[in-house]
Image 1 (cartoon, rainbow, N blue to C red):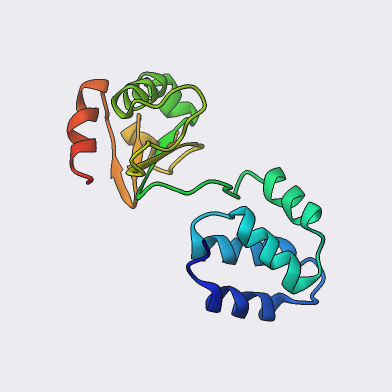
Image 2: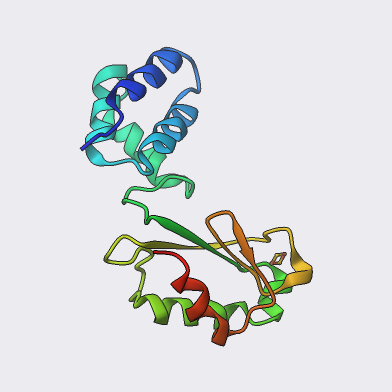
Length: 153
Ligand code: FES
């Protein structure tokens, strides 16, 4: 269910009819809702007259768009070169094991965490690095991961 219908209407009104507006429109709506649900995409289609297939096509093409709810805390695991050579894959594996994420899952069942792999986080001297929300954790070893995750409920 859409939580921010009024704000979504304002975003739609701001962009409606403008060429090339679909991507920024979807970005702003996602910022409000944290992801693009089918209901939200259908609503945008009805309000703007843009075909639902086009909206869905854009939302699934660009990796910046999420079609599933996001966890309360976002963990970004750096996969840049400096982190990669310093053991980023072991860090990633430890986090996935700790959060019991199977296969392609990126969000814990309790909605506490969403895990993302990202390119350089801009602090390579601290490699390997993760960010949890806006907090940077560097010089990591797999052993440090459980205590870091415990801080976020
Ligand atoms: S490569 Fe990881 S922070 Fe730069």
